[in-house]
Amino acid sequence: MGFEKFGWISYASQTRIAKFIDYLEDAKVCGTKCKECGSLQFPPRAHCTRCLATNIEWKELSGDCTLITFTKVDAAPAAFAEQAPYLLGLAELAEGPKVFAWIDRKLSEESITIGMKLRVKTSKLSNGNLSYMLTRPEVT
Image (cartoon, rainbow, N blue to C red; front, side, top):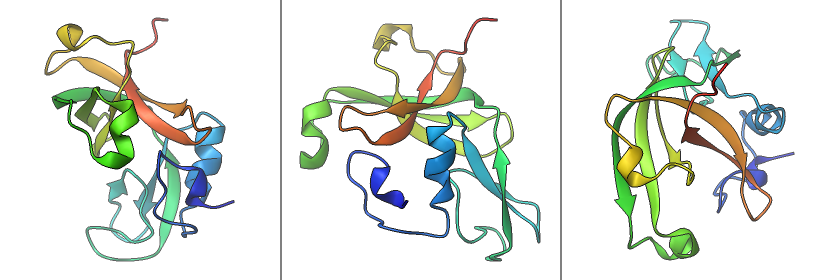
């Protein structure tokens, strides 16, 4: 299975990190950790962005994050026109990496504030593909 099952439009048919899709199917959000320098990356990378090593391992992430900023997209690129308007957010994961993702449509723009606690979770798109989004943490 390749990356063709990721996102609205997949630009990669097969990569060294195709296992990412398997994790999403299991409702797990995983990144890659470099075995050389310890750098943690999300989304996962085939090469370390810090030292360029290819010696990586998978690491499941908590999904807990804090919103850094967000924006509303009204005039979307053609490939995403059917989804507009939508919200995108940049958040910092508890483990350190930053994540750029769609914000759950269940969250109104008025309810979103910088610094709010969110959670990255897997989502299934209307086209049947998988992705991840920012949403409210589950209450336990």
